[in-house]
Length: 344
Image (cartoon, rainbow, N blue to C red):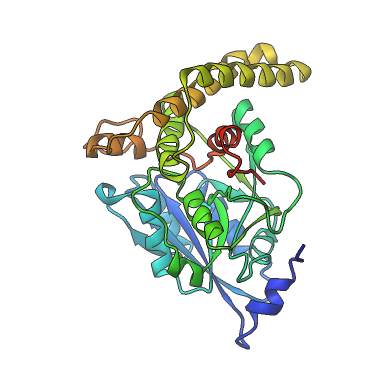
């Protein structure tokens, strides 16, 4: 087991000068939380390294770009027609000058002033990828709180077993990204795809519970379904042996409803949460089932529906947050069907 100080001794000051960390933020209409995120980044206690912030925007129609400029961020743009999660990350990484690349969602807020230090510290040549804890916010739905609690434990693990990862809150050595870039063709789970390739090469992934962020989602039920659907499509590439039958859909749905309902009942909230719990879990598992059976290449129109839910293809994108990056449920189902995919 390694200690967090190993990174600073081996990498941070090996050149005799402070290390530069590049924080890459993907945005699409993130004016609601972006100011708080950028303020939190600016207030970090970095323990000697310096920081730059790169915002990669994919066609925001709100004040996202103006907010980024006002905070002194470097801006990169990706046309809507060319957008994919992996391509957006690769654009940010290519523009970065730092030795470490940090990825954080535009709707995630660090919980304290040492988030960045805790996220960066564990990195090494043998463990070049580390992701941090995520917790739900005040508007997070009850069932998603349960997912965060299950897949983002309160205890760190350096390294963890398996290749579960989530780049809504993660760090990667820039030298490793040069060799293992994000797959731009995937409809999601580009972080787990990268982690699997690193794992196959004998490298490891770390989990830093102390590097926590609050992950805010404001999705319609249709957006929730599409999020899990596109991630299940991507999972076909990462773990082709994983299959979700209609029987699995029903079994997982009933199990999740029972567990969430029991927890809500213990808290005395089942009456007010029953409908929300049912809809979230239905959309989660129905989207996963549909995506698992989607094998054809996505058309341009369908691709835009996945990435920009709420508007028909070719329309101006709606001023809502993009589909979330949380894919713990996909990992959970893969866990049940394949011993190679493990959570932290």
